[in-house]
Length: 340
Image (cartoon, rainbow, N blue to C red):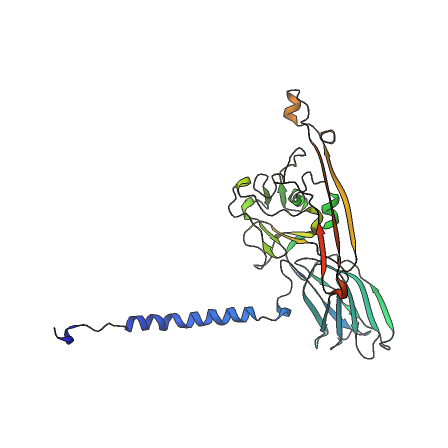
């Protein structure tokens, strides 16, 4: 057979397709690389961290550039340092929630020291510093005051602290039972006779935000999604429910949060768990439940049935501290929540 009778394969259409796809693929690659190497200052706060920002001025109100700003985590001793820009502004990003100490220094000004500055998850705390003329050896002690209005973001949300989680009534130790205390959020009435982890967080006791479906909520723990995408109740176990004594704080955002937090139209719940600290500390407790502390239901009263027997004594505790030379911290918790 004559070799010329065979048709040569035509790669022109293939080359044309490659030429059309190459530019958008290259753009996506460069965009991904830019996001990966994005400077922390542009990231601000995340679903697991907060930020601190403000302006440094002199007694006349003029901006102070190149002021050294040092921020120290009061629990772990971790130090972050930045310098104010030409406009006198500074920002310290990606901070674990907690209490911080702030120091601001510059030649020809007194050293400014601030203690107990609170940084919360998903929020940018604003603290402006007015420096006084003098020697750096002289110190000005400033008491931090809580911010009445979050001016750095338009998102709607509310912080629930770890102390509130421990002191508010949680019949089964499930923090989702108090999400309904936030404006715009509705939950089922808590059944004090429930056992296990209860119905919160597994679609058996739905949490509804602004009239949306319960499956529209987004749960994150320490910045990682813990959603129950299957939504099959007890079969898929629901969202992760940490020991209430391990919760540092959680925030429920109900609207106007940016795409970095929410995936759907419902509430965005950001839970932060506790970490260790340099100081050795601990506690022991008993979580006591008894039918004598519960009210009977309407329907049981209607047929003259007594309250069901419910007697639980759950013991637990925690111990935290730091290793030598502040190289590491630890926190160990004994179980409090019963099996699901």
